[in-house]
Image (tube, rainbow, N blue to C red; front, side, top):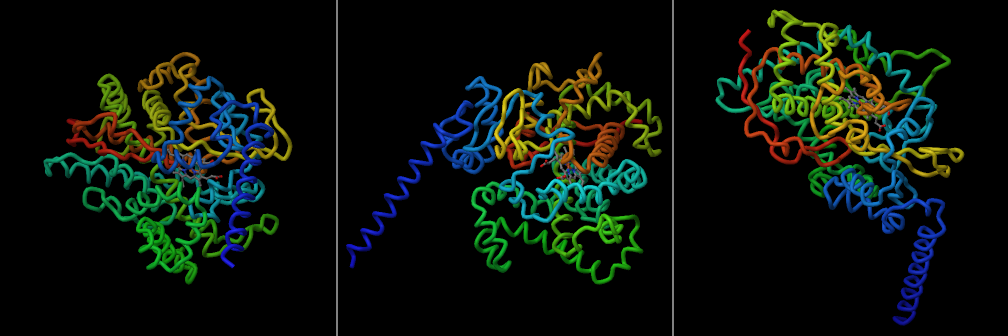
Length: 504
Ligand code: HEM
């Protein structure tokens, strides 16, 4: 009896080994991507990438830069069925207008917001959903709700000014993330996150986001874990893995808000301004009818919006402030320009006034370049037929991507890429650089919140450097170095500064 078990086990073992050997040989020598250079291990197995994502603590984007240097090629095979491009002209061919490549489900399902527009794969469905949400983030809507944004920035300034009496420096990383979180929560949902009221800007939602982010690589490479942790009762999931409590707490809190609205949609009439719920719950024209709007759909969309709108803007403001304070010339020129346009600092300055300032605009563009926006290369599946990218024929079904960090750090486009140099955006012919600023991505799946993001960046950076005199507290570049968890995650000591009001 025991013998027959051993025989079965040995046969299964041999068959598995044989299958693995055949797969390895096929991937190495007979795969359509064989002609592209890259690490052989990456061509054979997805565990190569998993190692850099999980074990190297969000180290994939950094490793890609190293690989392009080592192999000296602008197209690399970085997984059995995946190519990464470093030639910046490829960016438009992968993501630009007119492309209809599908987002790669393996990555976009890792965020536990499967029903959001962000995680939609079908091009037609995503376009329909974007058309529904788009007007809410149009420039006109942003201008209408500018006061709601400005009032949160005024609160930020008040909170930061308290630090002059506390005799300690303020954590600007948390302060900016709290501000963008508060803005997106109020703008989209008509509620306050209370993030700007919490002591030293420490608050539950940011903690939950920080707990959730490291899980995305685990969920991507081990999807079963995601289903198990999110499928079991809440109390059990948090015992199994405390970092899921963040996701569960967020779902619970926003779920309660959605339940209240679905129970009594007329409560929306009392909101201070329009929210995304007004858009979603307004009956659509017959010819554009979307699938029925469910609680789960609203929940996934809301959770993604809150994530998309908070860390991205907050991180860009932190990177901007770090570099402006580290460069006296930049700081002086910026402060002077803003002061000239906004002489009475206690009177409000509008977004439209600030966006006309050329130096402030250049500072924001340079900050977006150095903050990158989303640091994970955004994977797309090409098809339905073979296509040409960067002059090479790419077989249908191949996953392709180009990281924003690769474009933003290209010395041929941005000489001395590690230097914060707003002047590069003001030189003759610099309009051509705009097409290489890819922080918001490009084309049909580019950022839906871009208008709100620009408005926030102008108002936050303009107001900070008009009203506050900041002195960095032991700042080093490590304060803004990051690990790649889709968005940049700052691991070390956060960027802190002492705060005083400006003289006039
Ligand atoms: C500096 C700030 C921001 C940056 C750099 C940024 C960047 C990006 C990028 C690169 C994408 C494409 C992601 C992908 O293809 O996987 C994206 C998508 C998206 N962003 Fe933003 N974003 C910012 C702010 C915002 C804000 C304030 C919102 C408002 C809610 C927002 C909402 C979205 C949404 C809904 C998508 C998904 C669009 C789709 O999949 O079709 N973003 N963003």
